[in-house]
Image: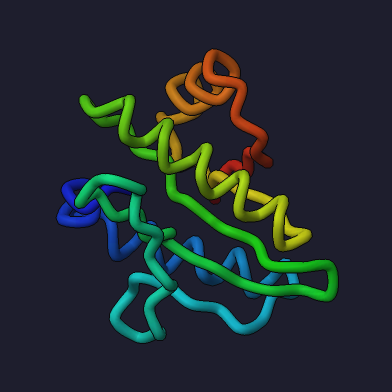
Length: 126
């Protein structure tokens, strides 16, 4: 999720729910932008000041996984760039990009992933 979306009032509730889901799926070494966890390592876009930080990173026996909470935004290009980068990084680390979809965000998220050919696992949130 982009920095402006993280200022959203519902972000903390979504993040808590997302972390619970990640833990239930058996992941460990969880890092999150949430205040109770160590922050994930940010990625800086080459030749730019733009920096992408995953919402959550976690590991399992197969590799490192990146988790993003999908939210509608006006800056679609930036979110697509971030998801493509995280998908590539996950592939390099034997993991996967997982996009967690809150209620009401499904169509937006599926459309972005399909139109921009983003390799991601879409997971509906409770």
